[in-house]
Amino acid sequence: MAFFILKRLAQSIIVMLFVALIAFTLFRYVGDPINNMVGQDTTLAQREALKKKLGLDDPVVVQFARFVDHAVHGDFGESYRLRKPVSALIEERFPATFELSMTSAIMALLIGIPMGVYTALNRNGLLSRGFMTLSLIGISLPTFLIGILLILVFGVVLRWLPTFGRGNVVHLGWWSTSFLTTSGLKSMIMPAITLAIFQMTLIVRLVRAEMLEVLRTDYVKFARARGLRSSTINFSIALKNTLVPVMTIIGLQIGSIIAFAIITESVFQWPGMGLLFIQAISNVDIPVMAAYLLLIAFIFVVINLVVDILYFVVDPRLRVQSR
Amino acid sequence: MSEVEAEIDGELIGWRARLADNDLWHSFTHSPLAMISAAFTVIFLLAAIFANVVAPHNPFDLSQVNLMDSLLPPSWMDGGNASYLLGTDDQGRDVFSTILYGARISFLVGFLSVIFASVIGIVVGLVAGYVGGFVDTVLMRIADIQLSFPAILIALLIDGVLRGIVPRNDYDDLAIYVLVLAIGLSFWVQYARTVRSSVMIERTKEYVQAGQVIGLPGHTILFRHILPNVVGPVLVIATIQLALAIITEATLSFLGVGVPPTSPSLGTLIRIGNDYLFSGEWWITIFPGVALVLVVLAVNLLGDWLRDALNPKLR
View 1 (cartoon, rainbow over the protein chains, first blue to last red):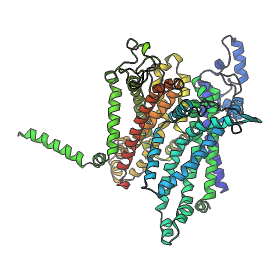
View 2: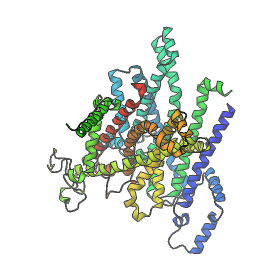
View 3: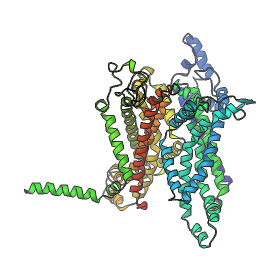
């Protein structure tokens, strides 16, 4: 087991270095970093001095090593557009994205898994067919359109919910939370639903497919032959085995929720990292793009690692094999 | 009847008989949902291609656009004008016509990026599966890494990088190609993996060994003999990815990093209309949205049908 984890850890580090290389290439070769940092009236001598100070004359390998070293210590340079350290910008925006993503992930799981199990157990029921049709529509509905429709109905026509921003936030140290005020909670509802719907449709389809697969296996047939109650079979045996592969996908889903948060944040003007990133793209603000890329890659790698280890813990067959 | 005519007739009958005998055709004519989706897609596609003939107005010809007609509601509502079926936008452009012209760009980007992605993916998959060894390991590692990130994120990133490289003045003209490149490069992995696994099965079959024995060059075996046998799954992926590509294009354009407002796609139209949502002019954004969803839904349904029809296990 230790060997397996070490191997995975080594793979994760290679992936991170690969992503760091892309981020470094972006920073170094897309546009001229010096030109992006100084004004029009900077003299050539000052440019040279800055170049020297940043070490842009050093061999590329040395520069890359320095880039990685800085990144590990949380230093991503200064945003070209906002003239502030990128790490400070991200620190300020991270809580908003995190709260939004977690709320919708939990929402998607709490609704998606029961719906998936139900549609698998009652394959031909009317409600199941309805759920499946809904999930196909859910997949075909782009995230931003869901947001717009919600805004139109609940924000513009009914005027029940705020349509942009986080509402009032409470600061707890450097963390800002919108869970502790009414306006914050109200602001959370529509963005969270928007973000959750796509993930939910995926979870429903996945749980359904896995559950159907498990229900066909011999051990389920045997359990039926033994005359166990069908609730025992469905929930203690089938559901348990369904959740193992589902876990992997859910790990990946959390990553994709963060990616889709870019769209949701843009629709609702939610002041998170996604909005920061999209503004960075329109303005070719490379340091912010590079930092965001590295951060997302890091989150992905950590989630993957955790899921792999969980797999080991949950599925005894894997432990036997690796011995 | 002369001999030649009889031959042509025979051939025709043969062609029809073959079609009627074809599994795919049989499955198609027995699935109403697939037929409706196909009909809708084809009609919409034709309307988009021939937008300059079909559309009642040319929204991008300034001499035909009248600012006095701006922000008119759909024709069935109070204040609507019969010549503007779905209303007009802030510049007096007919929403119905802009949807047709916009769908043209959405389809164009969708098709081009699917073609681009499938060419890269198929070549990588064929090479990785056939050559194997180190090449295979490297290519599949890259695919794994890319696959662990959502395509939309990769597309956004490539789009952002290209924005940095392409000169600002040319950007609007090149936006479509930038999008095709960004979406294509973020979608190739699925083809590569599918083709690779099919190739690894085909590689051990006798016809490939026969080709190797008579000394055919590797690329001939790969492209002339193996490729046609792995095309089925590729077709399914391509259909489903067409829907995804159209959504991705719309999303990027909605986020403001896609097609410019001067030649808007459906996504750009939704973005433009979004500004008028709060003042009550919902039709500018909702109708392009409905068009987008219908297209994507139809293509998705076609993809679902094709996957089931080509999967022998489900028959």
